[in-house]
Length: 224
Image (tube, rainbow, N blue to C red):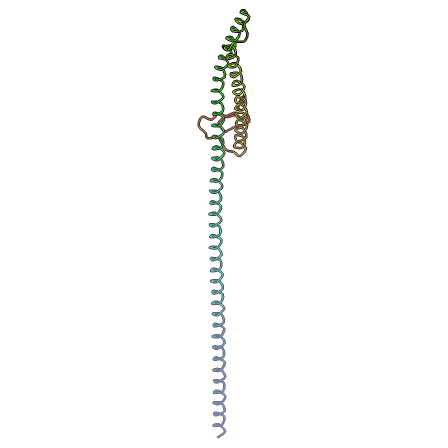
């Protein structure tokens, strides 16, 4: 009887030990599973953070690239606009310079025509004066008074003298117009030079002694 009780007690102890062992094993397994789950979650969270950081870095890089591309485009557009404006500026200056040159040439041509006309009129006046002198001498020799012929000659002399005075005034005006055109040409030439441009008018005569295009040297010119 005692032996049976001992055996039973031993069996109960063994069962209890087995239960404890089983519970310990289950607890360890549960802890391990929990730890693995935690590690997996941490790995997944790290992977998510890394993916997000990479996505943000990619977006930032794309944004910077786009901004740089836009800045380059704007800079190029600005440069093209500045070049176009600069070319338009020099074209306008050359156009104005050409107009001044034409005005000066017209004044010179008209002055030359007036000079020829004045010379012809001067020759006629000298001939008329000579004629008047001859008539006056003849009348003095005859002791006659002033004749109608002599009056007509004197009147013709006064008319020619008046016409000469008018032509002289016109010539002086043309000379002044020519000088004014030359001064404006000089100013335009030096403006072009100071702004880094060149004169593009074919066959143009440079008047400014300060004008120095890249392929030319300083010129000294007369404005008489």
